[in-house]
Image (cartoon, rainbow, N blue to C red; front, side, top):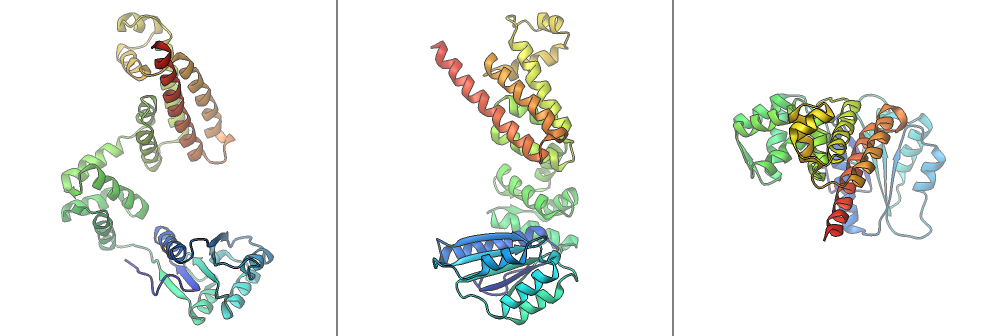
Length: 333
């Protein structure tokens, strides 16, 4: 995989290429290196699109208080000509107490800016698109190795065929496989893993939420979103699960047949709801219903980010279960 061209604390740096994951890792490596040398560094990250030249000038101007600064300007391929000129001018006489990183997604736009930085001696991190199957196989093998695991040739090929070209998904899958299978991964492990993730639905997420499994809920949510499950379907499944658990918990009977007849639900659903209602108080379920109602509105356009709204709601519901559950146990002592 592409490596840093020179020592990552160079005062001028260009991170360029189509592969977003590699670009973000390159920037993170520079940040770590600068922080190691300057623990009190002042960090600024700016998006080039729409950035006023004056704001950039303020950030690049010598600091009145001394100390090192790290400035990262992302998406410079989208920079207006005036901003590109300002960056080019700065590169001719950079501040020795400032590390400037410009991030370019590749292509011809603002190519002159990149050339000017290179001419000024900037270090370059190339992050080209990992387009061939062979390169993706090498990427996964390296990810597993860095995590302390081993993966057989047929397993890494199966994983790449199953996941596809997205490096973030490949990296996440490699990490999960190492965690799940103790670091030694074969083709059967990949088959079990991929089959399980492909079956993730909104109801899978809801089951983890209702049982109070915070980490499992978030993991299943992310896999469901990765697999293209609609936000509204996940929200509906969570609401249905909470509502059904509340209906079962509100009745004094524990007889599955009686509950099925009263609630007009199939017995299997009653049993599942009984299991999911354990550890909940009625008060907690009522609070969770309120969160589910808010979530329904959020995923239908109220929230700026439906992904964030789902994760926030899941965390809130799991917290409600933990807090009201502990209170109910203490009250019963």
